[in-house]
Image (tube, rainbow, N blue to C red; front, side, top):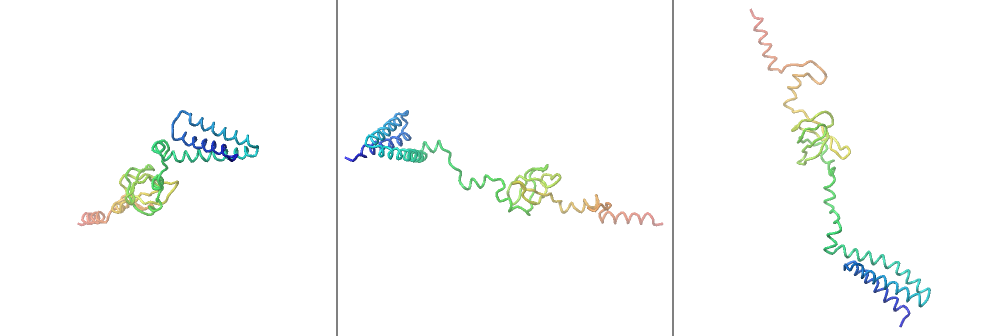
Length: 201
């Protein structure tokens, strides 16, 4: 019989009991038996020679953590292990979790505000509801907005004037250069006609 027979037997038994301790709840009894087998392994090895004892000690130091890691890896795939260990998120879940996901695609597009931007709020662009920040001023709810850029992961928008309301605003309040306010052409023509009739003899 080889001199390494009993040390090898007790080493194999110790590692096997260590794996069983992970899968079978025994209150630590199986783990204690595993430690006893590993101690007997070293005792038989050192009884043969110092060199054989040191060799089995190195094997124990390498095999113990590897066996424990393998046992935990196998246990995490059991029904009980899946309930205890958290499931890693799927790639598509990681992508959706980012608020700035594909926001660059919206720059330059026109949408509408779903809430008042004072200066932050919600807008809808390309069928997507997004948190946005007004570039300046106040943007009322339902106004048309233009996506300008991405800043700190948030979409920056600018409110757009209604094309039908723009000439009326210009007539009532003057142009952007600060010129005097003017009246619409129809109103101006009616006023001129009334003036001519008043001046007629």
